[in-house]
Image 1 (cartoon, helix red, strand yellow):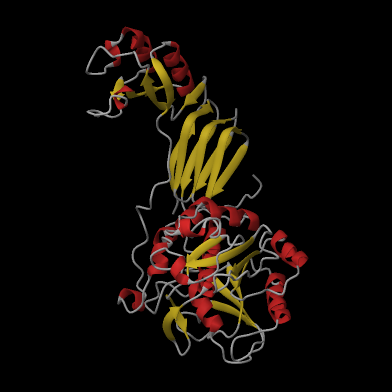
Image 2: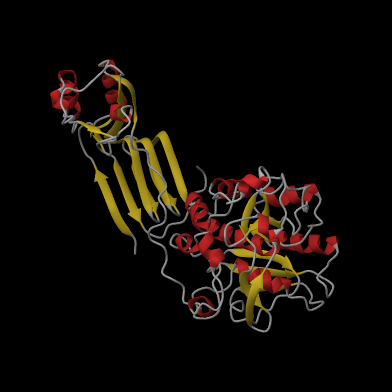
Length: 468
């Protein structure tokens, strides 16, 4: 059940102002000194009018008892009013060298992760869970656990669809079986094995499903590029929003890769398992094509021995990552083949909170939300944007920002995570409802005219109105 947090119904009069508390940091001019040790704004004649006008609580030292005399020049002033007006009046006093905004809102580390999963091999410590921990999966799951309507397309060898952790996850299995090579089973167990089911292991995709397409292959796991191309193209034709490819090539012409991404499907491709691998370089720069290399449990790339080059977009766990094995067992997986489906499963969560995302936007959000790789300095410019952080990627996917604008008319706006409003007003005779899954942040000036409605609902929203 959704919980309504806030409702403004204003019928007469002027604008209602909300969230206009300000906090400014000031620095005294080098020759300026405060007379009072209490730093009360009333103790300074020049500041008394500012105090009265903006109901300030006075100047407070930013660094009390600092040994560096320069730090003693910094103070914070808080009150109620428009911060730009306050800043102008403070600067006009001639006492301050600088006046800047003190409180800007930062993304907090996850403080409310999902409870530990009950998957037996993880719960009993029989298998490592470092990959999920490193990418902050439990925090990502506090926002989204995916959806059975979102399928990760996997083009690979054989898939053990009777495996305890895959039988409910592989909902489509196309292509003819050929040699008995388990690579597809390994990859599937990293994209979206059944999670929190009292069996086996967990995986980032959680409730997301798998659309598997077999590629004709040899017993050693090699396949003709035309066969890989056909499997990818069939998944695209079936409308799969994500296609995960853990092969050294795709067989796709550049124009084919462009058509796939331009029509709403992300291609997530393995960078290769040797330092000099240049897999997929011909299509790597197409927006919506994501090239993945690996890190180990210590968030280091070097020990992996895997690819690093200018075409890599992101790193992901790919050294001894626990996954599904044949004969209903589990074991470790090494290679960018293993890192790639973890990125694909994360994208499934991103699309659950915001199905409006384009492949280009997905790639950008994954890159912008990445964490640093510990030994990135040894591979400058060769590891993409860093290491996947699923939590931050899903949060970014489900966040809608409105800056310096007016929301007008009758609108119900949805966000799979939350809203950031910065200097926003509501139009006259308007009815604006924000439906957010987790939070709404209101910063700067916020104005609702009398006669308009502004409301916030907190629930299980996803992005539904894509034109914005």
